[in-house]
Length: 283
Image 1 (tube, rainbow, N blue to C red):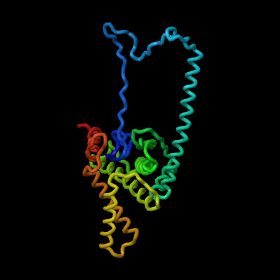
Image 2 (image 1 turned 120 degrees about the horizontal axis):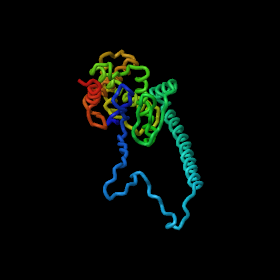
Image 3 (image 1 turned 90 degrees about the horizontal axis):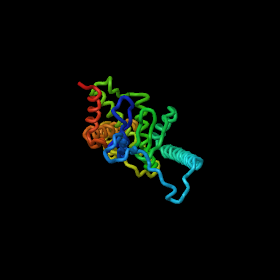
């Protein structure tokens, strides 16, 4: 699922894989099943059987077994070659993403965690970006700067799964489960916003935007100003902490109030996670 919102897969502890913020959910076509009982007057050939060409009418000899095998081998070689090319392109894209994040302390720390934990990253054409409990999947159709911010977000989800605090849909109370899931979403969102701010401050041009980015920055600024007024002798570290807390609280409010919603259902995140808990605890 995407955000109109943000999210990630949580394995057994969540109802489904939740997508990253800017990607439309894609519906997979349902498989068609052949009707095994023929209707009156209808041919009895299975719906999945292809009609055989009459090569004599086409004026061409019917392909022999060696020709058919040769075509199959050629197709397999072509597919293998395409896979090798795609793997090389994906490896370059991942390195470009890592290089982009080097100038962001938040981004660099996320990449270090990714590498230290040997977390696998795969790419796909569309379908969203997400953590599925074992690997991170990134939508390669998005620009590299968007992929970079998304990777930071998904690494936060991976970190929650590996290090905790991890929401447990079975053991947690409903309120605790919703609170933990919201915290994970908000921290991932905030990390991506912080990474973008740090990259822009370093001189990089980042065109991607994140949900509630402007609200976070406004709240951060006001939090610093309020801290200065309350304590004119506050240190830079104390002011930064005050700003980050104000920013976090503002993003959390956005998730709670429905400023961002799930893309698949359009509901507020507390309702989405609450409904998931309800399904796991039928009365």
